[in-house]
Length: 225
Image (cartoon, rainbow, N blue to C red):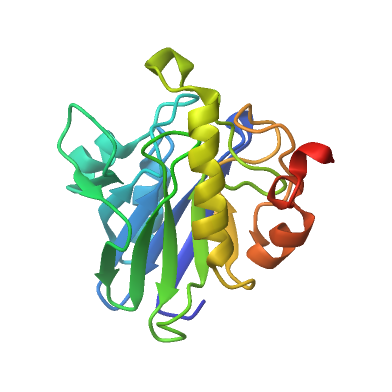
């Protein structure tokens, strides 16, 4: 990005899980998205870069691994952010469409993208020095993967029908994520091997333009493939 803004991806192969640290050197502030349970790596890296982790965001409630948001809260004093539809027994900041979090040259903007889960959000990253009008990247959680989209059938035990969540997912993809510029980098929460999708690619990052043309689930008639 630039010398003042940091974007680091962490990948845990056994869970095919990706998490992210975004930092701004001018304010010595960092945010972590979808942290692993072992948070030492984020804290150590942040300290090496002269940063303090003050924010932790979950794109959704993760059913396939234990996240480290509570430990980052307790050890770093970080605030936790969840989609406004989420319900939790701990204190958090509920976020909805258009909400922003800014520190220095970093802006994080929220898109509500339900479908994989009702409370799912995607997080847009803007580098305010480079271009405050267009997102540099989108952290899409389990809504949009490289080569696939999130499964809408994993919340049946909580009373959500797959058809209902599938309809929400379709809207999230067509009316939210596919409206972003083609050059937007796509950083999902999982890669190949995850059970949250069936056709996930091995790549760690893609662009929306590549996914728009190459992701079967984003085509006009993906079921007819």
